[in-house]
Image (tube, rainbow, N blue to C red):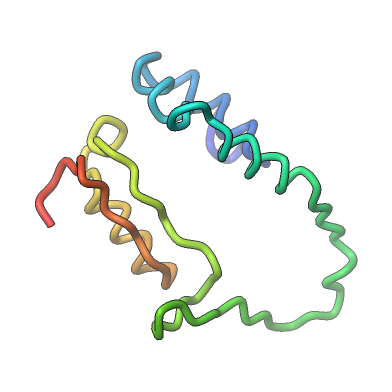
Length: 116
């Protein structure tokens, strides 16, 4: 399986599980404490149906929003994750570049692996 074969979250998860050492995969795949927030988020996304023909004829979309006075290109941000160099050699630097590229926020963990 390659990244080009991934079409949904479960496909990406299966690829990561195949390619990462199990302690690293388990760390990324797990959630904090009793994992209630993860379950609620997953349930919320599962209740959303994206129907492809709804956006038929839409030429451009503006997903931007303003958060704390800063305009973001999309209503998502990259949340803090500790020890990011465990799963990418550039760690938080790589995630910060992705956030900048896509015009959104990135939160830095107190257990970061590179200096601010």
